[in-house]
Length: 315
Image (cartoon, rainbow, N blue to C red):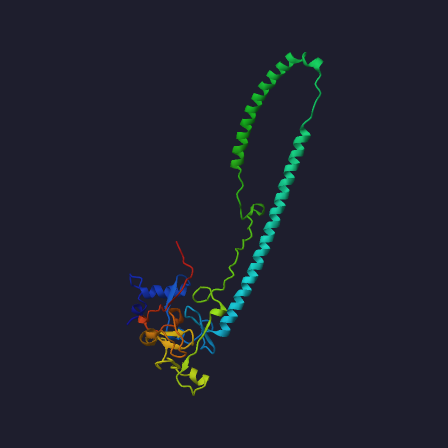
């Protein structure tokens, strides 16, 4: 094959492979990739640390966590909420003080306006002997003054119209190049933070007293923890002794914390609704389906594609 055929520079079609290659090299456009089994969390790993749990607990939604990791997360979130609440209270105090200053300044302006109006009122004594003689002159002066006022009002209307047109033509707009016209950024208002700690996986409220201790049944009780973690099949169902994994739907029983398969729940436990480990009566909320990762196969029902949104060049 010639070099021209290898480079394929004579093709009239922009192929999908070329487009994908150019997108990866340019740094623009959204990239998508399919995840493999190595990028999927095992059913017995913590959702925060992604490591096999030493002291596992599960939420009512079925998400598994290491007890120490989830407690540290809850304490950290409470600390952050306390900081945000403190900043919100400080902003609230600043707004309250500024509103008080504005009310005081407006009240002061009203007082000053009242004083100026009162000072402009001047009372003059009336002479009864000269008031009758000046009536005719006063009427003439009134007529001339009314004519002058009408002419002045027309002139003032013309001048106000011209000033309005000049002000509209010379309206100053904000500019980023002139320092005196540069717009100022207003401080961002802090919204009142919620005091509820949310689960990092489900987004629902999570509390320490709602965490349920989980007890896995090891495949071989004679193995220590290190030897158990090196095996691919580590735990089994507490009732049927079936091997547990990401491909096997599991459930946690609230009274005992035992992990059983969903098949065992449907065929055995739901018949008499009794915990086979402790003998306690169960309800529907006491059977918690355990959230698990995918198996790496496309038909596992779990989306294994990851996308990275990057800048897009638009014409």
